Structure formats: structure tokens, C-alpha cells
Image 1 (cartoon, rainbow, N blue to C red):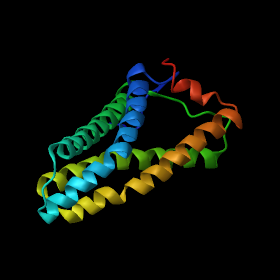
Image 2 (image 1 turned 30 degrees about the horizontal axis):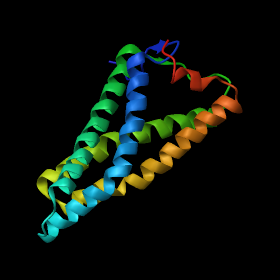
Image 3 (image 1 turned 90 degrees about the vertical axis):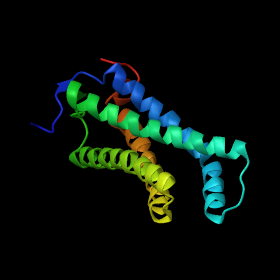
Image 4 (image 1 turned 60 degrees about the vertical axis):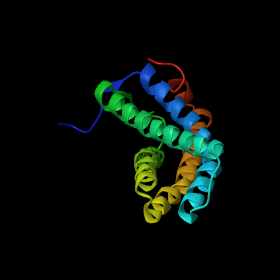
Length: 168
């Protein structure tokens, strides 16, 4: 079985939808993360927490799980139904950087929610630290991803941004 995806003209509608849902879910996670931190600390200190804070902590858990599911669906779709070719107009270093960035983003989008779920349900501080450690690398990689897409679009003129908004 080959690990390379078949080639197609553009991303599928499912892949595009999962991409933008992951973006939305990560924004929700960012907004909601303080509540989870508050509940997590209270849980470990044995101090009471009001029900609205617990509800917002569960929002964090649900949307973190949705990030994991959407990332896995996106990977499945990418390998089962294909992905577009990398633009031929860009230099090899840009292709290499894109591949490494995408690999690391997917790795974090899978490992981080799994670590969060294990930490929450086991109460493990160590695994909780692993979960929170990945936040800064994820933000850096997302920044590299966005800058890379803009460079491809406006410097290398590859029209790559059209592929992530219009299915082919």
C-alpha cells in the first residue's frame, strides 16, 4: 500500500470543509482555553467550580475532540480521494517547507487532542503539560502555513488559495 495520495485537480469539498472547520474549532479552543485552565487547576486543588465554568470546560473538550475527528477525516480524504499537485512554479525549498509544515500541523492536531483527553479523564498533570506544550508550536506552524500560502499566492503566483476555497 502506497502512502502517497492520488493526484487530482483540487481539494475535495469534504477536505475544504474540514480545513475550515479545524480553523474555526481552533479559534474556539483559543477563546475557551482559560475556562479549561481554571477548571483544571480547581480540580487539582480540590476547590469548587461553578457549573458554568464546568460547562465551558466541556466545550473545550468537545471542540478539541472535533479538531481530532476533522483532522483524521481530512487525512483519510486526502489519501483516499487524492490531493492536488504541489505547484510546479515554486522552488524545492518551498515545497520541502510546505511538506514539513503540513506534517507537523497534522501531527499536533492528532497528538494534542489525544493528550488532552487522556489528561482530562486520567487527571494526569504530566500528560496535561504535554497537551499544553503543543499550543505554541501549533500557533507558530499555523503562522508559517498562512505566510506560506500568501507567498505562494502573491509571490510565486500559483493561485494556491483558490484551491482551499473552491472544490475541484
